[in-house]
Image (cartoon, rainbow, N blue to C red; front, side, top):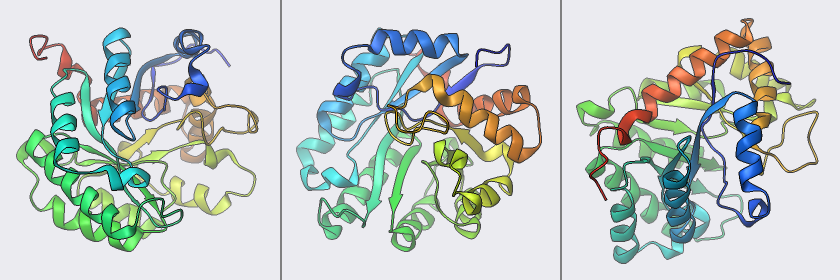
Length: 276
């Protein structure tokens, strides 16, 4: 679906994963051909955070987030914190993430997830970076953390605290998140046949607080579902979003990309080339 439209931003794609090792360059070429001008690659542990920074330094369109996913919360300690902090000095790091809570799989004990989450929220305040938030079956605890944390935001993060990645939360929760400075990430599931409830919630969001993402290689949108997801498929998410908001593809592309620019400050690196 190559169309002449405003640039798109894929605000969450895991290009560090080994599933992309054989054709990463081709994937980035296809993304560019599909109009994707910016990609955010989040870390989920120290190795992937390091790799995200490396990719951001290798490709001009790639930016990085660094952090420890709740699945890996048991690896969070002072040494991990110091390395994440050091990685965040890269001019292409624009967020702390992917961080949050996941009580569905509990691959790390919930009490360790909460410790790691709070530690990284504190680090984001210190670094004055927005956060990329993962939530699964933990919305009450998660919103408690975010509502408390948001009261401490410095002026640089007011209205750009972070994003609820691949949002599944109901409208009330999404609105509360927006009130404390968050954007809402919209991904492939809005294209699924059985996702009427999610589409209803998404259509009621303020468009100026919506970001588009693929979460590649996961959450592949229809009609590509069953295949490995990739950033070029953001066009399918954008088209469904245009349908839901009853606007043109150009409006969706221009608005969501501008939202991403305001949140992540994509030009962060251009004025800081002397930072290690």
